[in-house]
Length: 205
Image (tube, rainbow, N blue to C red; front, side, top):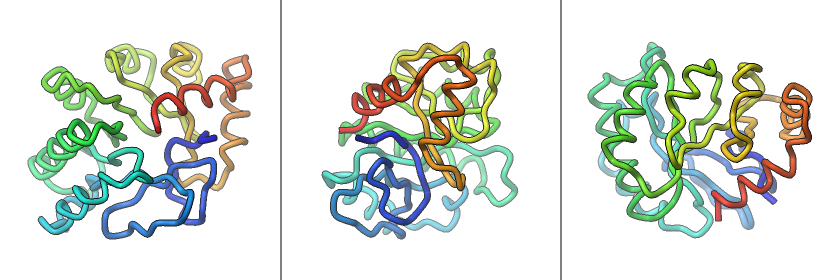
């Protein structure tokens, strides 16, 4: 059963989906993956990387595309136009292969929302590591958009989000996914593991 919707820990994660770039992909039996081109590395990627991503996206053990997206804060991120080009290509790929898109959204909520309106995607979009305020949650809450909470989050937002849209992740945290779900459950005031299991199972197949 998948509980961890997004992790960068390289060791086998039977309860998690390992997120990696095409260059870093190395399959392990019974492991699930999300493969994409992160906005921080867009500037160094070539057409070969995108071709490799296209190939990997069709594997059965790759259950999602990403993380992809826009980062308007990180100093090392590629120029906006390059990030946008890469994001658009991965939106299209997600739709083509019929797999969810995992999104890195830093100070780019307006851009992400505009693209969702433009594409009206059939595939789910998952905003990973979501820490936004309730007002940002309401802005981004469109059909097919889900929110993954990690070690750090806005408690008020956690209590406001509909349970059907909630996922959990470790990302790069040293905490286990069980610890993170326990923390989310305490702050929300209800046992979230069954809900997160159900939501994750419905998204990643």
